[in-house]
Image (cartoon, rainbow, N blue to C red; front, side):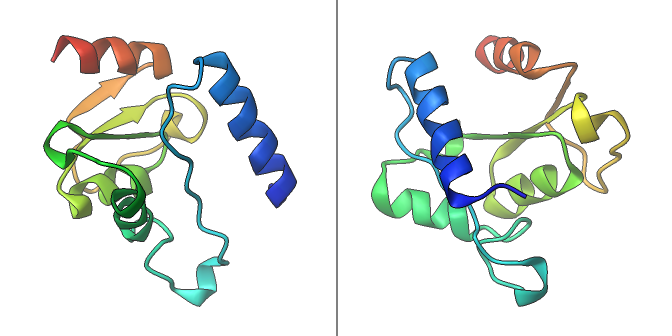
Amino acid sequence: LFTEADMHGIHEALQNEVGGLIDGFFHCPHRPEFGCECRKPGIGMIEAAGGTTEIDLESSWMVGDKSLDVMTGHRAGIRSVLVRTGYGQTQNPPQSPTLIAENLLEAVKQILAS
């Protein structure tokens, strides 16, 4: 598990890497047994992001390496990409993702081409 400081460090590094192009970072601080709506496959984080940034859900994508990421995309009404790195090597989501990519770079290329 990451600490809050770890998460902020990761976010800062990502933001620096892409020149400040990311509008915001959101994560669920709750443990799974709390059953909160912000924890995937709940869409609370997507709703929270929509409250602080202008998100066009029709143009949005949920990208991740877990079935939960694909399920979250479906629940939020957005397209999804299952990335076959990390957990994604063994995941078979009950709902089909819009795209499947070998890695994050390939996911970006496929999204831009669609």
